[in-house]
Image (cartoon, rainbow, N blue to C red):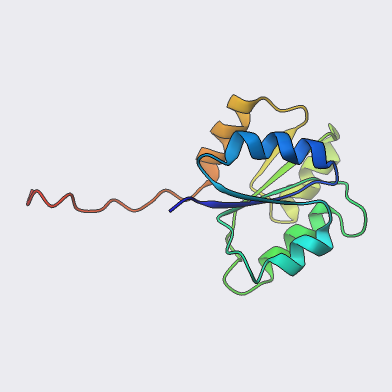
Length: 131
C-alpha cells in the first residue's frame, strides 16, 4: 500500500509539480487552502503532510497544530515547504510541531530524500524461510 501524502500550497502549479514527483510511489492529494485540507482529514489518513507556511486564512503553523490535535494524527510528520528563508519561520515551524523545513525552490532529490527520512518505515515481516 502506498503511503498517503497530503500537501497544502496556495500555488496550484507548485503542487502539480510536487505531485508529479510523488504520485508513482505515494497516494498524493493537494489542497490550495487550509480549510479544504482540514475538511479532507476525516477522509484521508495521512502518513505525511507537506505544508506551505504562508497561506490565505489559516497559515501552515496553525494547520500543523490543528492536524496534531486530531485524535490518531498526533504523530503524523509535517514537512514545511516554503519560500521563506527567515530563521524565525523555521523556529515557529518546529515549535508548531513540524519535523522538517525545506525552502523553495526544492530539488526533486532533496524532497524525496527528506520524505523517505520522515515516513514511518514498514515493520520487518518474516520472509517465511524459517530462519
